[in-house]
Amino acid sequence: MTSDEKRLAGQGSFFGRRKGKGLRAHQTDLIDTLLPRLAVDLAAPATPEVLFAAPVEGVVLEIGFGGGEHLVREALAFPRLGFIGVEPFVNGMAKMLAEIERKAIGNVRLYTGDGAEVLAWLPEASLELVYLLYPDPWPKSRHHKRRFVSDTTVAAIARLLKPGGEFRFATDIDHYAEWTLARLMRSPSFAFAAEKARDWTTPWVGWESTRYEAKALREGRNPCYLTFRRV
Image (cartoon, rainbow, N blue to C red; front, side):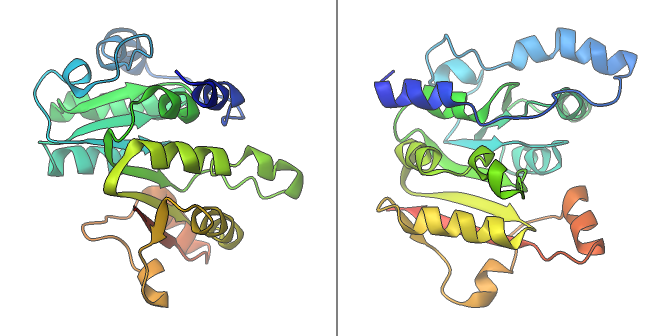
C-alpha cells in the first residue's frame, strides 16, 4: 500500500451511528453466520479469484448500498460480474444479507466499514464501474468536509477504474450535485458523459427507483444522475 493509499484508508469518510432499530432474531443470525462467509477481508489479496468463488468477467463496487435494493437488482441482472457492496450501517447490511439468502445470490461480497478503506485496498484498474447513490449530503457548510466525494476519493476511484470505466453518482440535493461535478470536472482522469441537460436528469438504462428516491420525489426533490468516464 502506497503512502497515498494509507492516507486515504486512514482519513475516514464515515460519520454517524452504525446501528438504528434492533434487529430481528434471524437478522442477527445472518450477521453472525452468513456475513463472515461473504465479508471482504482487507488482509487478503484484492483479486477476483480470491473474492469470488466462481470466475467473474469484471468487478463493480457500490459504496453505501443502504438496504441493498439496487445492489440486489444489479447482481441478479449481471451474474457474470462480481459485486462488492460497502455499507457501514448494521440494519442495511442485515437487509442485504436477507435478500442474498432469499434469492441465492452468489456474486456479491460485502464490507461493513468505511468505503475509503476499500478504495485504498483494491488494486489499480480493477473495477468496471463504481456507484455512489444518494450519499449523505452533510448539508451544513461546516460538515462539507465529511462528504464522501473529495479530491482524494476522486483520485482513488480514478486509480481503480479501468479505461472507459464509469463512476455513477446520484443525489437529490442540488448543491451536492454541484460539489461532485466540480471535483470530477477538475480531475484530468475523468470526462463528464452528459451531452445535454436532460442527460443528468434521466436515469441510467435499466434503473429502478429505490425507496429513498421515491421519498425524495414525494417531498419535491428531483434526482440528479451524473456519469463520469475514466479516460
